[in-house]
Length: 461
Image (cartoon, rainbow, N blue to C red; front, side, top):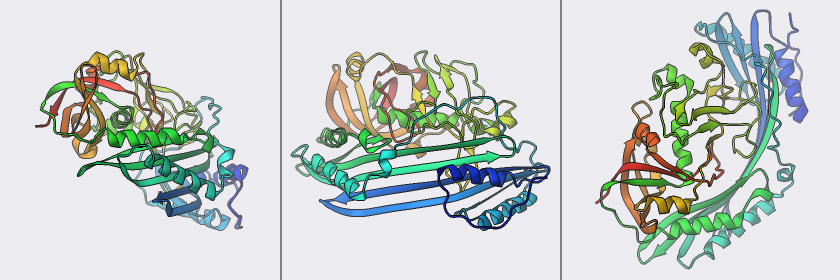
């Protein structure tokens, strides 16, 4: 029998001590018990400037532990926002108590090593920790000035922001899991308001990276200026059926929606339009969709999932054929298969769920300009609205508001707004006519790419 905890106190541990603490807690498991300790800490900064002044500045640090206990087919979970050993001991006792009141479930149980070797990923920037707050403020102010100077039609900058996050975690179980990881991300973003006569339009730009050296303020400012000014004079278009070209940002959002339907838990509950389609063609043959957290360039890259299994490249749709669903340990056991190392969690305050971390479509060979030329006449979508209410993940019905630019004779034409585009996710996947060669890293679980989809319904005037 493993030793019971002994009361004591520690401060917030150093990087190596996170793993040591998790190992210590997992070692307190009793006979017939599975114990998982998830220890994490993070630092976050967000700065907003407006009209040359700091409007808000927040900086926060957090540290805590989440503990799962499985005994006699019952699972209990508890967490604490402290790493003091006295508190950790109480948290373990609470998790045990919660397990005693839980319903029995034959599928519950912690992950066990599956032999996959973790990728050696460099997703941490030491540079970020050394950037003074004053320098972060200066970068946000510089971005605001660049947007204002970008075009005479820019009336104001709604916001210019700097944000960064550093997150470290360790997870250990008495079933053999032992993992730790850390990552940093930072970004700058701006929201511009352009005006012409009595009309105004908004547009945003951003740049993301691991450290300050990865950020491109010029690009972020130019995007905000272009995306706000090019919609000036937008009108309501005529209704019809046409080919729609989605910009990378919109494609990333669509990929995240599709990934939700490929969640093994949703499949088990009958809440996926692909529940009975495994091994069948579900998209154009040109489409290969993967979730690859081992790609160091992906925003969500990580060597381990939220249960401590080594992440891996999962091909979900390959050459148009549905190949796999995403599973964590629990949903995989229920489905009679193996985990795809797709466990995710919001932090130490929650247990693991299932989800994609680094979605991407294998890029095509055509540039955005070549795609527009091939389309001839159609619609370029710059932004959409109503995604949560307008997309049904069970039926696949798709109907959302949009704005963008008409494509006329292979080039961008007049701007349009107050329109709705509609189809089904099933048809949209089958009707993909072109995939761009322009992957764009985004602050989300997906990498975007220009995507052309044929025969969508556009409701306008």
